[in-house]
Picture 1 (tube, rainbow, N blue to C red):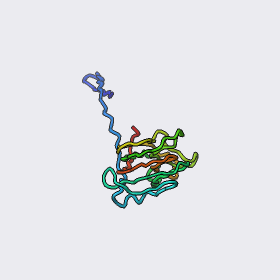
Picture 2: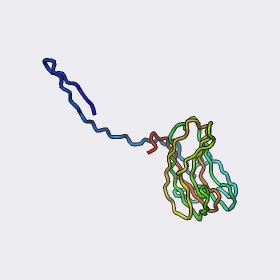
Picture 3: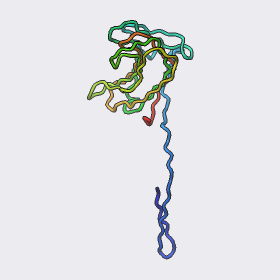
Picture 4: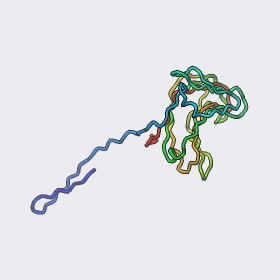
Length: 185
């Protein structure tokens, strides 16, 4: 709402009220990096192959990362990507990816699953990560997933981890894209 004072002859003032409709801007996201497994970009990812293996396989489009866990003990098999902290502190990150699952086990503990996660090591309280991000079980065909999270202002290290924890099975990854966004919604 906007109020404007209009002056008319003889010192008379009239106030006009205008209603202005404001259209909210769409949450803008800028793509920062894209990872396919057809080129050298996948070499930014480091394997953590405790109890399993990481290799290339046929993917959604071209090649994909194949993360297989054969061990039923606790631990994880994953690809890890360390992000430049100065680029991400206090920022909203969005991760888009194509994933596929093959016989991913289902244990009752919360963290035992196929997963996509991000972890920020903070000065005051140690590791922080979103609690509502992707956990996957069973067998499923290629599907698109997308997650957003605000990186804490006091983050000292930021890492994305995608893989299997405490379960057997295979998860395939392709077309991973990282975005910096202005809104969480």
